[in-house]
Image (cartoon, rainbow, N blue to C red; front, side, top):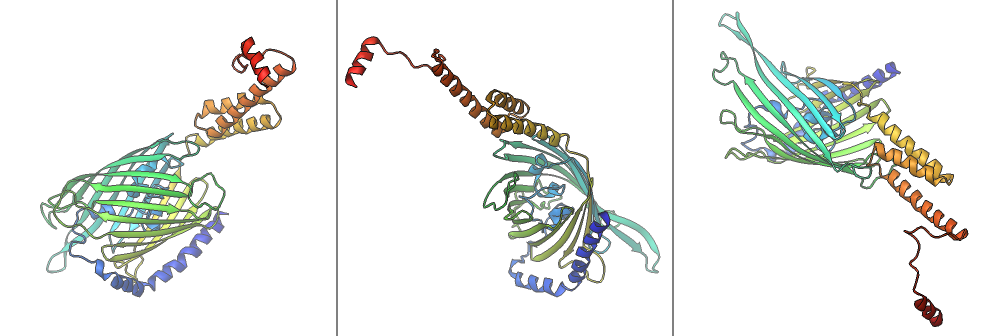
Length: 432
């Protein structure tokens, strides 16, 4: 099975890569089409590492991920998502950018019920070599940018029928190291924060599943003071995602750059769209389009799911891609560290609930109430168990009333009718 999976991944990525090398003309044509979006203030912000995707599905779907946010790359997309991830994960990513520019990233995320926590960071490094007039190497240094963040989120109003509204924030610190031989006095430290909201529900759902098929998200990213009088790449991003059929997911993001601590005009609006298709149980494909500041970007990706590890490979084609070398690739490996027993817990709840349905079908209403109560003791928000318990309790009360009538016994005090005074009874009889 693993050999088949790797073969499928290779067959998928190889033609995409070859096709990518032939798409440079298309990219330039798209860029010319969107030429009106180029403005003088594009790219005037500091710490570009903040807006470079780590990798994973976020990058593969063209960054249209604000409302999707279902793997560790949510760290860049929406800080509210850590309270919704299914598994505890350790994720490592490598992104091969322009020429010798590379970026390494790592994210660890864990969830405790409705509380999600994550820690992550990324490290961008660019080598510089100095030569003298004779061509002799004098020094070799690196320009680096490091970003580290701590995330917390909580899912409010979560229940069986409503998946709640998640709110989260990621506090981040960034450090830029510029060697003095390149430009003295340019190293700097910055602080910023991301804020996000995320919710999921059903809209135009054409397949049976307990998972909601529509989601909406809103984030404010990289909000912080200027660094050396240069503004951060701050933005407000809204996104939606919709699964019309089970194996397909469509997503769209609208990004509005802002300059909250600067008088400079922001960049124009940015647009991102993406699609993800679950081809088999172990393989999924993604693609996306991003337009930001007049630089259109097309991304193609593939995800391979094994038992306890997941691999994700992306190829991005834009105006910085060089078709004579293998750059603009990213690779992700995510280690599944379990779900903290949540699946087993939910299985026990559902077993009690199903047993209560069996008892209900057999007319054993007392057993139905007891089993439904056991399910609710474990999970008070499991509404189907509460509905089954209440229905069985009403039937028990009705059965008790009918038995009392049949045997001529007094009705239970809570259900017996108030006796009418004798005179009123006679008047009632006369009126009839």
